Each structure stands twice: as structure tokens, then as C-alpha cells.
Length: 333
Image (cartoon, rainbow, N blue to C red):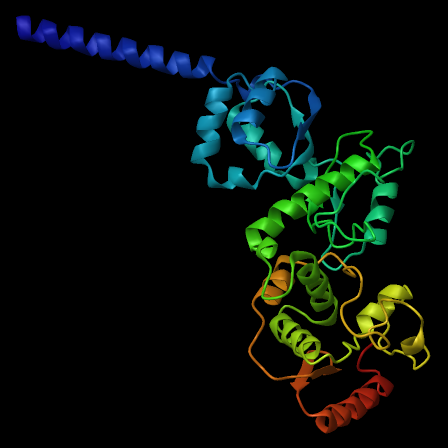
């Protein structure tokens, strides 16, 4: 009889502890049935999960930052939460909060900086974005990732998705992109240089690789650029002239265009152009830091999806004739 009583007492205590634990857990989290109105919630680029949690609690989105951190660490998808301005409900469970923060449709006024975009492209996007202030358009105080004589931000605006809170200035938006680029370039090892080439020069090369090639041949294009530089041969890249004349996307380059007086005219002037010509992707930078092995000096896209590399100028000339025939036949439309 005493044993039965002891078992009963222990069972009752366990049930009480379980009830208390469940009650404590429920007190640490909102029920989704109590969801309140939406607010705009800003996450800074590089912000830690602990900081996000504290801000969510202080704004009344979740009940417990501790509970959020626990769920954040247990859910691999939570690492994909983007920086920017999110629309999120108040008084919701931490699981629902994570789901809403991961929902791309809840990112406000998303701005996408594409691989190969230029500073002018980004500036145009910013000026048309509804969250960017129309009153303050100055950005002179924004410094590029790598100092250069032109103080150019070209190549310093990392390709990614961005979202800004209302009335963000152009300067602050650009600074966010530059900070992102600096962080990513450090991770990629760009700061370490490569041989005689410093980080800014490598960034310039990567920008040309980005425009002249595609991910399947980036490393070969990079090798051609290095091979030409090593023997003092003019780079003769159409992309640099198209950048100077704002004529990107054109298949053909006129003989007149190759004679323009611009430091970006790599037909007329040997060596690298003074700045990058685009914002390169991670793949283009990786290829620049680890180019393919080869003795190629020439390359040409004879037809869509058919890019060829050679050291022989005669072979290149024959391919160029084939390219012209394909253009006339409309294969590049």
C-alpha cells in the first residue's frame, strides 16, 4: 500500500512539473490566434540573430527573445533571413515570426543589384525606389572599398538583394552596398592580391571577366587577360569601350569606336582601364583569383554558347569571319 502511494505521489509530482513546464513554455510565446497589426521591421546587414531577437521582443512581435534564439538556432532555414525592411505581424509565435521574415513577399521595396551592373544602373534603381529619400541625393562621402584616384564606386556595390527602411538616403544605401562588398571581398581573398596585382587591379580584371565571359568560361577569359598583360599586349576588349560609350549589349563594335580617346579604350591604350567597368559576381572574382592554365591570347563567341580560345591569330581571324556570318544570319538575335 505504501509503495502504491509513493508511486501515486511521484506520478502527481511529475504531472505537476510537466504542467508547469508547458505553462512556462506557453508564457514564453504568443499564440498565433492573438496576432496583432503589421509593423515595418528593419534588419541591418550582418546583424546577429541575438540582436534581431531582442528587437523583435521590444517591438512586440514576439514574447521572448530567448525563445526566438532557441528556434533560430534549431531551424537551418532561419540563416536565410535577409537584411532589409520586413512587414511582420505583432504578437505572433516565434515560428511564425521566422516564417514571415523568410517570406520574400514581405520584404519592402526590394532592390536587386545584378551581377555586371554598373554604378549608373544602381543609382537609377535607387532613385526610383519608393523607400529612398528624394530630398537628399548626395553621396560624395561614400568611399569605395579600395581607394582609387577617381574615387569611383564602380565595382564596390555588391550584387545582392537589398531592402531599405523608408526615407533612407542614397548615401546610406550606397554605403550598405559598399560595406557588403568589403565583407565579401575579404572572404573571397581579394584583399590578399595575386602576384604583382593588388586588390583594386584584380577587381578591375574581375569586372571585365564578368562582362566578357560567362560562368562556364570565366577562368579562361581571366587567363587571356593575364596573358595579354604579361606580354604588354593591349587588352582590346569590347566591353571596356561599350562601358565608355554607354553601349552595352551591342554585338558589333565599329572601327570608329576603337579609336575613341578614352582611358577605357583598351584598343588604344595598353594596360588596365582606370576603374572596374561593372560590379562583378563571386564567380568572376574567384576565376580572377584562380585563372585556368593556358596560353590563349584570343577568344571569341562564334555563336551563342560557342566561345573559343586560341593562341593563334590566324585561327582567331577565321573564327571572326565565322562570327560575322552568324551575325548576318541572325543567330545572335
